[in-house]
Length: 362
Image 1 (cartoon, rainbow, N blue to C red):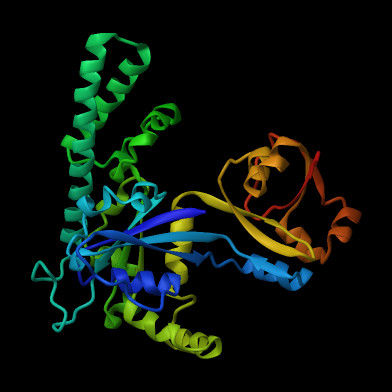
Image 2 (image 1 turned 90 degrees about the vertical axis):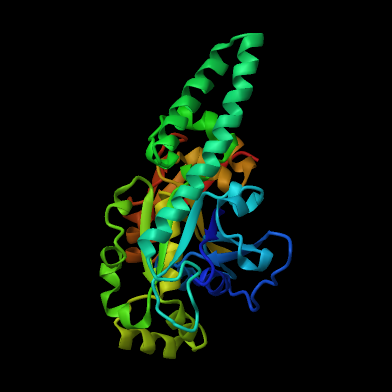
């Protein structure tokens, strides 16, 4: 399951978005202790819906994203300091910064004015400072350890961390470094916040919905969004709340009137999924049609392990058919008759939309 952490300044709409994304019925209670509230959202995927209609299974299981929201201390602790000690944020695959663009005199901004570019930069600086503290403490320990006895591994870690420190001191997030995989693996245990992919969720004013596609420019974030592993998605939480209270038919009509092809919530979930470079493959049958989340370039044997480790260990072959072929033919049998079901080995790179049946030894 993918994991994402939501954060932002007070009154940006972060907790409301968390409730909408995860169908939480009540806002979390604020208390003296900073905690994380965790909920799960389904990844919208029309392909799984069509496969379910085709096979009519007993179970329909979409891919999911786990969202975490900071709660406690009256909602005041919203930056990096509040995230450092919370496992759902340290372990998150991505961070979502909810940024206020809506105008409401009844809900004052803590900084006194609406300035999304300022808010994004301020939060980015907090993440960078938090990571800089972690790097400096680790470098101090490494220096002591190297005096006791040098080793190539410790030297390599020191070299990487010195590079990280230089970037952070230059106000650059670690996600922009582009470290090679082996170096990134060495740093994984630190769970650096500024190394995580960042999704900027722009919470628009209702009046700005017609200009949603131009939200990044209106927010003054064009330069910021040119950074690595950074993406933005516009929503209007006020409208999303109204949509959430309607039945499916009325919600569709309401969105059509607003010129929206899909809800903002679906866009946030899908953008979180895409930001990390994940794809879906499917398993189908009378018992269950299910979407499985994997990183791009995952081999068949590793994809099998997402279902069960025994399937990966006993992997023999993968029966693979493309989504378009299966939906076009209407059945696996018809795809076999037309030679569209392939047998692939362990090193096959799974493609987005593959329908796979894993043959394995028991």
